[in-house]
Structure formats: structure tokens, C-alpha cells
Figure 1 (cartoon, rainbow, N blue to C red):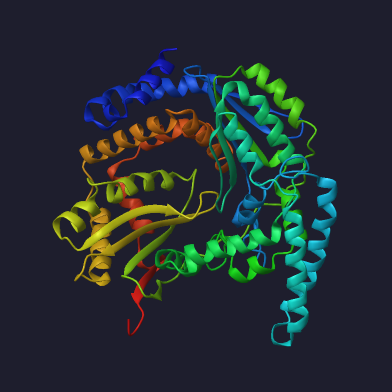
Figure 2: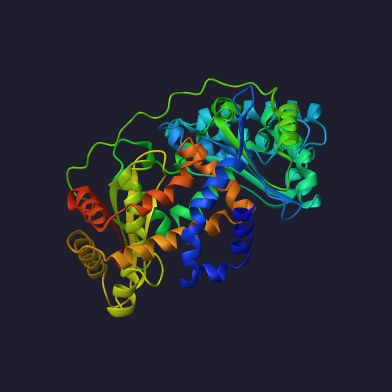
Length: 507
């Protein structure tokens, strides 16, 4: 009870957490909280393999739920990129019961659209040899059937039901590692949630499939093709990864999105959106025993699937610096990435410390040196991308302040890297980092939403939610020598990829 009370008090006064006066309290609190959390999180696995993580918190009559599937763009293959992201869109479209006025009348129209689309794609893929007249007839016929189909569709019925019942934060997200669906609700609406989400897993209907592909292609144009930073980052990752699918964009390549076959998307859905490939977390005003009984009623009859083997491709060791330029009518910027291991490798913990030292906020080394002192940058950041299930990249990103150049910014980054390699950080600076990481940890877990998402994330990526409890303990054991040795091992020229955004000639 004491640990829960402290967490509640801390979550209600975030400004105190940011102040140095709270660090001693946090230091005492973290171990106690880890012990109580270990006892309070209820784990249960349904007979079909669905993993449940339940945490009772009775401060308010609300709950936060997360359904996280261990599938993302890393599980796709060349030629079929963008499936995971498109499916995220499609699963908002409804089921045989929701999103439709009459599914029996709707089904023949869906089948007819599929037949026309297959013919249209086959003709269009012929390129210059395509029969343009046939294509125009097929497009016109597809549009006619789509208009007829619209009359039977109830738009956004999931969102409408949840909103009317007090739901907030209804959303989904797809990354290279996972796909998640989240909502926060009054606690007395949990059975409604179970009915809706179990129906979505049992009876999804990929309605409006072809118009939604157009939506995703437009999203790609806006976020990547016509966006300088998006274009730079996409090209950076493609250059950094030679073999591993982390180099493929989550949204997919445009030509792949355009011709994604519906049958292939349905196969991907059936394979990966399975109960034995997901974790469900529910945090808030619940009775765990009753929730387990309810989940068994609604979800137990969903069949498990044979999940394909995970990606075994290893990115080969980089044997020389890679450099690319991306031309765009935009101000210049630079992104530098170094290959590094992921959790639970010991060096990954060290990079959490390095990230904070170099790039976290106004007290970080990069901000003070490059923005406040030298005034050569408008922004500087460090972070790890693109995922955590497989070895990833530690990244520097910056935008120069005119008239300073990208070259000046790049050299300044390398100066700080060399300083990190050759000058031990002080014990005081290391303690400051640990204190801030602990404070961030507390803030992250202070809300039902934060706790629900964090439990699901670590269960999915680390295959054990308890990783989050040992994380700070591991961080505390890091020494100044660990930081120097890790920097020397990974932050070297032969291990880096540099991507520069440059002005198009004549612009």
C-alpha cells in the first residue's frame, strides 16, 4: 500500500519530480516499487496462448487497455512492404457485425471489387504494354461498385461506440517491431471493450480496402516523398542496413503499396494477428479474477496460429563509413547513425546513459556546446532507431544555424564523441543521469495509460515485462569506464552512416 500511495502522490505532482529535491525520495522508492509491482501484476495465459497482464489501481473508476501484436514491418518481405501498416488502417473498418448496415448484401460487392482489382492490377503491371482502354473501363467499373458499396458502410463505428461510452485515446500504431491498439474507458465499460475487440479478432472485414490504399499512398507522399526530413530519414535507414529488414520503411515502398494483393494482406492478418502472438494489458479499477473469467469467455474460442520463425538475418559488420546525400528544396540537416546492440545486451544500458549525457534536454552536452555556446545549430538530438527487437542504431541529428554549415555541425558532433571516448564523465554527472532516468521511469508508470503501454511493450520486445523493473538497477551499476569503453567500441568511423540533406542545385 505504501508503494502505491507514493506512486499516486508522485504522479500527481510532476513538477516535483523534475526538481532535484525529489531525487532522494526516488532513489528509495524505485526498489520498493519494483518489489510491489512484481507481486501486483497478475499474469495469465489463455488456452489459445493469449498473454494477459493485469494491474489493479483503484484511484479512479477508469481503465487503460493495450492489445499489442508482435508483428511489424520487420516481419514483411521484399515486394510486400507496408502490409503491417495497411492492416492497422484496415482493422478500424469493422467486422461482419460492426461497420456495416447489412453484411449479407455487402459481401457480394466486396467480392466483385476484389475481382475487378485483380484484373486492374494485372493489366497495370504490364507497364508500357498495358491496354489503357481496358484499364480505364476497369477503373470506372471499380469506382461504380465502390459507390454502391459506400451505401452499406457505417463509417468509424468502432470510434463512435467507444466515444459515446466515455472512451478516450482510441488509437493504434505500427512500428517495425509491433502493432498496438489502445483505448481508455470507464471501468464499467470493460465488457463492452471485450465484446468489440474479440469480434475484431474473430471477424475482421477488410472493407474499403482499395480506397484505403489510396489514403496510405497519400500519407506516404506527405510524410516521406514530399517531406525533407522524412525523405532524409528513410534514405538514411536504407543506407545503414544492407541485409536486415529494419532498412525497409514501415509505411512501405510506393510501388508495393499500390499493388498489395488483398489475399496476401488477409494471409498476413490470419498468420500474425493471432491470440498466441499478442499480449493484452489492462490497468486500472478492475477485479483481476473477474477479468480473467471475462477474457476467457470472449477470447478463448479464437484459434491460435503457427507463427513463422522470427527474422534470422543478421546485419553484417560494417567495414567502412557510408555517406549519402539527399537533395531537396529545403534547409540542410544531418543524421549520423552507429550500429549498436539492443536489449538485453549490457551495452544497450550504457547507451541509455550516453543518450542522456549527449542529447537529453537543455542540460545535455550537445545543447550546451552547439546551441548555447557555439550557436552553430538550431536543433540537436540523439536517439535510438528504428526498433528494439533486433540490433539498432544510435543516432545524432542536427540542423545548422545559418550561416554555419552541416560540415561544422558534423565536426562538432565528432568532437563530443571523442570527448566521451577519452574523458571519463564525473561521478556527479553520472549520478545526475541516473536520477533523471529514474524520474522518467516513475513519470512513465504514473498513469494507467503509461503503465499499460509499458507492460505490453516490454512483454513484446523483451519477452518479459519484468525487464522494466531491472532496468534502473542495471543503469545504477554503470561506471565512467563503461561509458568510455562502449563509446570506443561503437562510436567509430567504420561503424557509422552519414546522411546529409542538401539544397537542390539551382535552388
